[in-house]
Image (cartoon, rainbow, N blue to C red; front, side, top):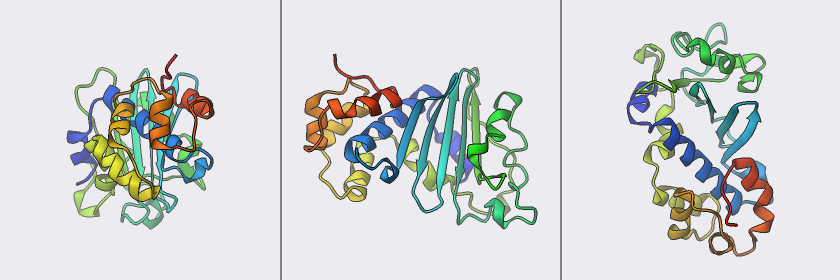
Length: 220
């Protein structure tokens, strides 16, 4: 599965944003004290008019999703992919990956935080303008190889609480209550009961800053 395949299976912008916020909130609950150990994050105040969802596995594989009034811009980087820019002769993204990105997202293409040594770190790219009815990608030669989009975005495509719960139980080496995960995936206002079921050592009050950064609702 390549970015072209992901474009046919990725949910719409609003649903994708909700899944990103839910996963980031759950990661913050499971790992409140060491943010660098979380896999998923969401910054509702990344820059004026833009929000950023991201994934970083700590091993060189990442994705970033920019949400704005223009729509959503998605990039992923699989460091083992043959489309890794460092594998190209000019150490630039392979032909087609970024060439067709529309002007409304060009600032994302040039975004310094998505670059390393001024090289855009991207093996897969998708975008969807607000008025679009489908995700779009560049025209990348499939013979170039696997761009990593399949596994980079699999949890966003699947979108089920059980998939997250199973992953989190392994990643955080902890018991993960599926009903509580379901609550967060449904974006129900965060309560002390849900927090304590997922992490008995944590209180809702300690999560205040994280919830505000993510833009996740809290119970009054």
